[in-house]
Image (tube, rainbow over all chains, first blue to last red; front, side, top):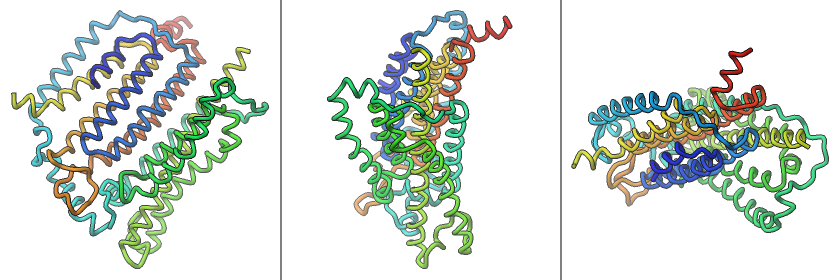
Length: 317
Length: 118
């Protein structure tokens, strides 16, 4: 099914259809991840692949137009290249271990240690969270920094001017009472659910990345129905910029505090008398930092795109 | 037949990856190129996640009644990769919008024409 959707994306010339197919594709891969036992990943993919990414693409299309021009010139050459590369990769797969085998090399190294020891060393049931936040905390710090940098990149490309106009309800909200009411009922549970995912990440599937994305999706939904200007009165973009930086700094300062307490950078065991409590505190705080940064950057990016859209409409008027 | 049963996940990954690759090199539309990159990216996610699967394994959340867990490490890597992926996709789309502003088109061939003519 994934493959069929992908083929549909190649063949379709209408870019709106392509974006819709991308949403379906994201949803399908999320369900695939559930089948593969990767519940944390499925969470993220459902919010990102089926929610935020098609939205951003739609906003882009609103600005650049939906028709694609046919270009046939290099198709044959490209197809040949793709077939040859694919065939070579196929030959490569014969050397790979069988699917689902417990003796594959990937399961022989560090993974058994995480599974056997993380319960006693970190003291939280969700192994994914303990690996993400504690064992590989340094990696995750880098990734949060990458997200922050991408946010700055978008901001510098599509700088949002502060809104000076009055803020009328957007057309969608004015004309669709049903949509407006449904969204008002839905948004509080979405935000609440995001907080649950944030703080329950130690025990069930969840954590800062997922929570940040879900929280952002809630605010983006609000923005879509009531317009950027109204949403900015709730969460202004200046606040978002500060929050995005604050999340990264919160993460980094946990590392510094643990250094001051005599441990290594991001070694949470020294944060409290009992190493397990220290780990708990450290993971909770850095997940919060991750969540804040991810949510702030996503909403910021969305504001930038939507702000461009508004400018274009004004220019046309 | 056993080979088919035990390796089909890699073949799906390769097929998806090639579809994404084809879109990136053969299509001139910049938005579609970004969609192609996304497909390419997802195929890598699927490769990692399926490598972490163990038959009879369960989601890696500790519980006394479970003995076999799937490998948690690929999950961690891909989880962060997805969020980083959407951030970079957004950056790409922002670039597309700026290109559209500067050139008035997002078709690669037309952009090249305009570059050569002036």
